[in-house]
Image (tube, rainbow, N blue to C red; front, side, top):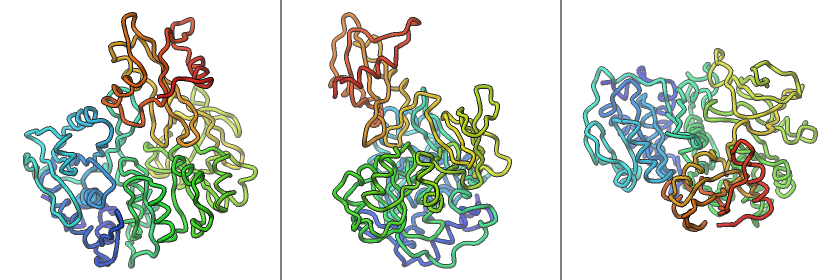
Length: 503
């Protein structure tokens, strides 16, 4: 087996993590629920996880399933897997119990890690799997189920750093492989900067409020660790906790998804509460120009929107502070210009590149994938002006972005149509001031069927993730349809725009 202390066997990202964790072990690293943990405490659990990964994970990819939650122990677990050259298979324990169990079963993992409650409830014993229970940084992991020991000839480092679960696909969950090189370019910069680790820890305290089951949360944590910057880790975005952290640690920059930004905007917070902040970055979902400008007007802080996707391995376009100061008045509504060495273009239906200010499907060559990256076609309609600023005009698919989470209408429709009383369903997105969009559903009953919105909501809670459940369900005699028999989604939207049945 590989020796976890032998840095020659690991990617520069794993070596950087090890270097930072051992730089000043007695210095505070993570604050969680008001309690600080040190870099040394983080290093101990990370090192133990690294050894266990080396012992129990087998196969070419060395995938380790982690039921991720926002706690220091889960951060240490993720770091330990990367230190060992393994692959973090992200498992979201909040997607619904049945779907999470099916996800775990489909991955066929040799090693699965989570809290005692999560692994007890969600992980079925399997002869090939070892199950570890974690609790906090000072408690060693407990082997709940002992599987086979990994074969030594299979203990090769994986090219894949994170096997990322994305929401919003039909059928089995879609996963995106983020390689070590992609991740390193996102959090450590260009390849030429990988060799040098920090000589001292950074000043200041960052705030991480994105979930670790979302790629934004993983990037933010790894960016802090690779820079040697301590951070507050919030279990989820909570306005009061976030504001307390801002007042206590006075960060110069913060990141807020549109949902969180709107909560701050419509709160009782004042400019004095946020006086340390020089810029807010916002991504994962569209943010209206009106909200961005209202935030700036209220707090005096520019909002720098960005454009990214899990498939890109990070951001590919965004506003810089300098661009905002020079161009916002004339380019308002844009998601900024290409960043991080990315290339962007717009193509027509046949894949032919279009000129400046012509609208079409957006294609991207992410800088995170290196100079030989292929063009990746997105599901977004966009245009690029002569100065390189990018506008996202809509989606080529029907995805609903609810507070940064992607909901596919067909997933919700199929779940509704499994109900014995439902003859058919149609699902569309409805604008929401706080979340951007939410799914809403129209259902028609079978001739002998009987149900109501409350009963359907309870039914869906057993099948779907919370963010996928419609905020309104209308039970109608017949869904409006086109001449071809398909649901007339325009008519469905108009129904909800003029008043549906709220659940």
